[in-house]
Image 1 (tube, rainbow, N blue to C red):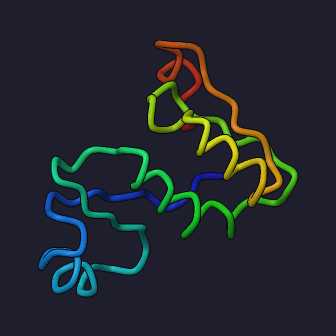
Image 2: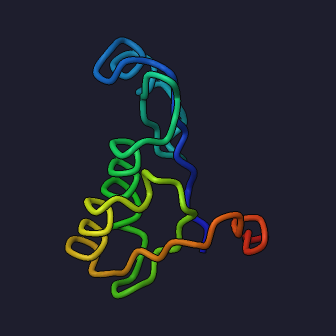
Length: 101
């Protein structure tokens, strides 16, 4: 099952973009603010806690690409401990091969 996207907006966490703009955005996605609009460990944690944990049926396998933010020990522990699931990393350069249609 496909989950809603995580849209990352450039700005300072806790700053005006997050405080003033994000509340006006459509509610059909998860939004996060990051200085460079990149997925990092903090943004991945937001996505896991605000969406994934409510959308999966435990136990499950959460399949991710090999972006370093996705497969940190903290992310693996969050998925195992709070989501009662397993985080499984795809091999390098395999994302396009297994992309859902």
